[in-house]
Image (cartoon, rainbow, N blue to C red; front, side):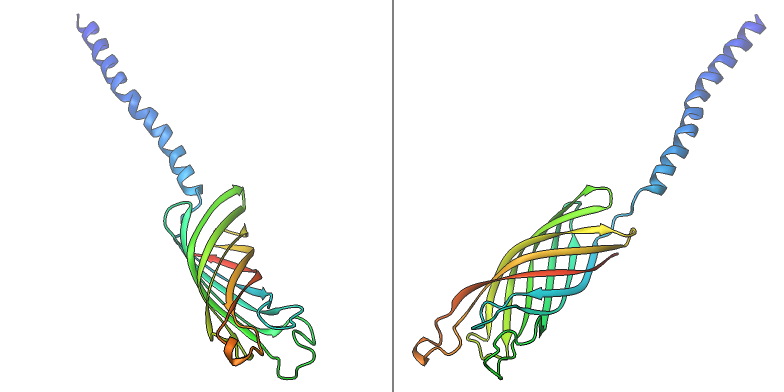
Length: 207
């Protein structure tokens, strides 16, 4: 009788310990996956080379180059808000954009904001699209208005070098509205919309 009771107690204890043993085997596996999972960052900062065409300047043939900066705050896995700033002070080629005018020395700067949608498409490769709104200024050419409303859309891709760093290539098409240079006073405030393609290449840092 005592041996049967002892066997029964041992069976109950074994049954009670089985879930604990299973849990002890599963826990290290979950911990390992958690340790190897890529961390989530809410911010990314981009800095790099930038190019813009210059269709609002009479006779422009090439474009301008400079620097492009942006900051994106992520809200969830696929959505973020981007602030984009760019300054293009240097001609791409000699004699650009107005070889017949010694005073032709334009610069372009822009500040734009808008939503971004992004996602991972293959291992280290992420892609994104954005819509940007803001203002653009064309300097050195006495353009009217001094600052034009600007808007456009584009996108790009990031190639992850590490958890925090990535290489980015992007492009977009930004519309702005300036008057023709040399307009008569009566037409000086009659702006015409122009679209300028932009490109950028540089480094992204996530934190």
